[in-house]
Each structure stands twice: as structure tokens, then as C-alpha cells.
Length: 405
Image (cartoon, rainbow, N blue to C red; front, side, top):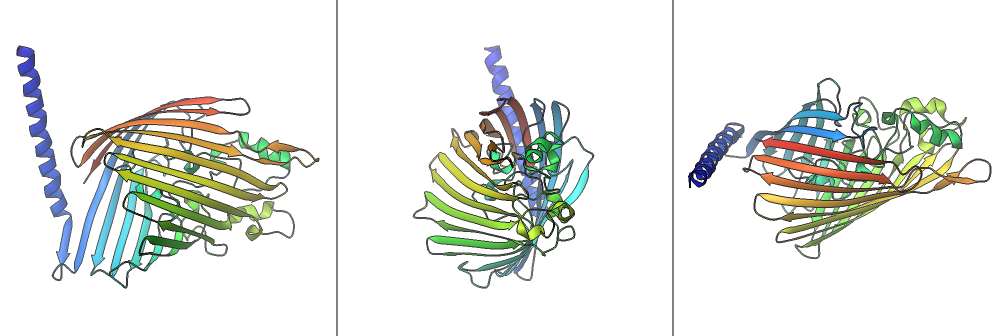
């Protein structure tokens, strides 16, 4: 009986404390929101505090940049949203962390996104956006931030580093594979996270169809240092787009495509004589589907990618993932994701062929609990294994506490 009373007291105390925290954030939200000119001008400052902890085997999986097995990765993200009438919208995202991807580096401050959007008609048939913002390709990017993402990391295709390097061309087919044993951050995935490259986009919705197209200063595989126009200009732009179809409120289907050069300017001196950056491109074709009904949500993406590699030829890869999220209660959810990436063959320069990457499979299992509408805890376990070659595997355990305001 005493134990029951003690547990009841703790539950009541935690509930009261949660209401106090909730009230604090509600008052903070009102403080960080301003309105003027009869509500025609509205601006809001918001953000998230993410405290992440990782335990993994070396070499670190994905885009994690750390030589130690246990990594603590805090992050402060601030968002500024401003609306003038229904036509003008402006937003920014700035971050204080140890790097765009989890790392053990020193702290840094960045302006990851900034964009101005013009919507001439209220029905949303057409939007024009200019600035530095996430790619329109696929269906993962709209839910990639920590509060919306059921997992702590990204799907495999957005973070698995391949033998493609945007900084230097290989000197031979054998060198194309052999140099991958060096520092992995010299190389690129098919899509680097949400790809916050700079440029212009057109988007809108027409009945059951929605569309989006963009011209960016760098390719989907480009590293974060390439996304700013001060680093990479528009001499070799990348063009991407997505067309979506919503037959009803439950299903959403999409088709994406992208085409653009993937080398950075410093790579030009390593190219064959008479060739330039524009001669070597990344082609991506993607298909996506999502489903949402009651407590269940499903997502899937399929990507076929080709890199034109100097002195090697076409390097093809296929990657996909299948993801499910189920809400057991309004606060508790679970998520499961299966990822796989397969690599094609390239010429070895002597009439033979070899695999240009090791095929991978990865399973991600996560659980999340929302204590309030402002606090969330996620736990994740991932197991990754090479299905060809040495068949190396990697285990990752991660936790993420998110506070949003």
C-alpha cells in the first residue's frame, strides 16, 4: 500500500511538473511571436535543442565524423519565420553545433537556410523561392528535422559515403577504388542529407498533383561546404524536380529526377586534358510513396544514380529504404526502417570489370516518447552489414532528447 501511494505521488508530481513546463513554453512562444499592421505582418522565432549520444564501432558509420566510439553531440537550432500578407514568406535556419553532421569537432555557428518565397495566388498553384534551402527531391527531406524524423539518423542513401569524390578525379580505374581507404570525408554519398544548396525553385499544387523544380549551385551529392554561393557559384548548375500525385488523403506518390556536375572547382586540375567539370555529371532518378491512416504511417524511396567518373566510365548504384511508424499512444511511437544500397560494375581498364562499392544492408529500430508538446526522447539501434566483399558489420546505439520552443 505504501509503495502504491509513493508511485501515485510520483505520477502526480511528474504530471504537475509537466504542466508547469508546458505553461512555460506556451508563454515563451507568445513572447517570441510578434504581429503588426493588423496581423498582416507576423514573425516568429522558434528552435530546438537536441542532445544526442552515440555508441558505435569504428570506422564510424554514415556521415558521423569521430575517431572515438562514444560521441556526445549537442545542437541548438534557431528558426525565424516571417509572413507579409499571404504573398511574401521569409525563413532562416541557423545552428550552433559541432558540424553539420555529428562529430567531435569544436563548436561552430552556421546559417544553414535562408529563403524568400513569393506566392501570387492564395490557392498555392505557384510559388517562387530564392535562397539556400533543402532540395525538392524525394519525401524524406520534408520530415528530416529532429522533431518530425522518427529516427535519429537519415536513410542510408542520404548518408552512406561511396567511392565518389568531388575534390579530385581518380588517375586510373584501380585508383578509383583504392583511394577510398583514405579519409572518408573526402568522398560523397548519393545525396548529402537534405542538400541545402543555393538557388531558385518553382513549386505549386494543381488539383491532385503537386510539382517542384529547382536550379541549384551544386549537385545532390555535394558536401555542406559547397552549398553556399560564396563557395560555389552557378557556372555549373544542377537541375532537379519532383512531380507528386495524391489520389486521396491516404496515399502520396512522387517521381524525382536530378542532373548536374558533381566536382568542386579544385578538382578541375585533376581531370583529363581538354575536359572540364561540366563533362562529368551525377544523374539521379527517384520514386517515392507514402501512406498514412490512423496510427500507421509508411514511407518508401527508391533511387537509381549514375556518376560519370573520369578515366573509369559510368558508376551506377541503386538504393532504397522502407520505413514504418506506428503510434501506440498519443505520446509513444515505434519505427522500423530497412535500407539497402547496391553497386554496379565498372571497367578495370584491362578488359575486365569489378564492383565499385560493397553492397550494404541496414536495419534501424527506434522508439520515441513525447513527454509534452515541447519535449521528446528517442532511442535507436542500427545494424549495418556489407553483403559483398569482407562483409564488415557495424552496430550503432543512439539516444536523442529534443526540446522545442
